[in-house]
Image (tube, rainbow, N blue to C red; front, side, top):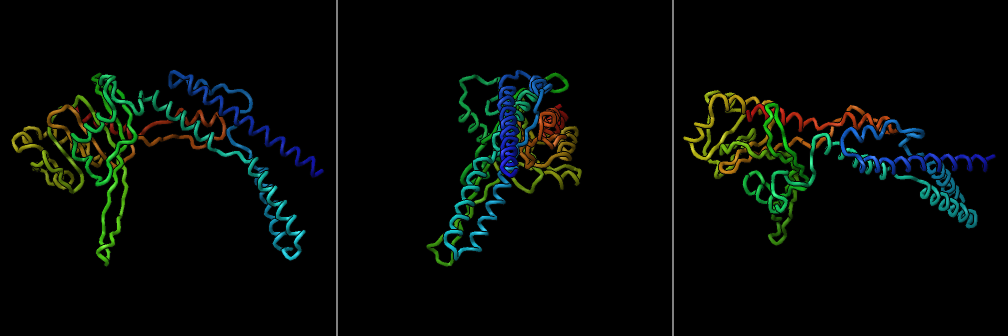
Length: 343
């Protein structure tokens, strides 16, 4: 009876995990062949028999429990060499078999992440690790990004490294029908602070790494304007401060430009109101370049963060619900508020 039970458990274990692995292979095919966001959802329904996406690892767990029992038995009879040796050997064999039977969730995690990226690319027309489409194909991403970072002083926060490891571009069409190339990005910077010890020859290095997220908007007005919600200065060329007659705005925002006369012309009552409304919803740094028609916004909120209404992804139906409700909430909110700002 115990032998038949073990055989049955092993057969069920292999059957369920084989079905899950087949489903994972099919999910890769759906994501690779899909042309649109809807193609992915249609590829998941109807699915057919065996829609499970959860590996059965009951058998490895049982084997580990039994192996632990043999280990304790061997320790208890440690003075009886032969009995202890056989117990430890049995425990090792059971542990090895449990390891071989165990199925990691890594293949499932990888295919779900792939489908999520495909959904985001097709739903928002985002092209990850690609430059905005209106630039020539010959443009080198490395030099283009380096040039963008040099245009704005907010990308000099790291003493060791200032990198944009993740970026995605698309063409943003607002409600008035105007199209603007944009590029979302993740900004990682590393600072090192050297602290001298009691012995002047010994220097301790304290390293900190931080991450911010932001957006470049191309074909924006060249206002030569820099605005921040933090108590900081931008430095040249944004060295002239502007103050509103509204004390609440002065407490909330610090506004800088190139020179006082042009700054006074730019900061009309309508522009002041739009900036106030924008920074009611967001915090960070907003810069309009003075020569190039590029706007940059940088903040602590992750613009790539995924929001979904479905949390359970243990079968194809729940995975489809997860992908169907997938959205970039922070990104959508930012675009909506930028439209009001740039109108």
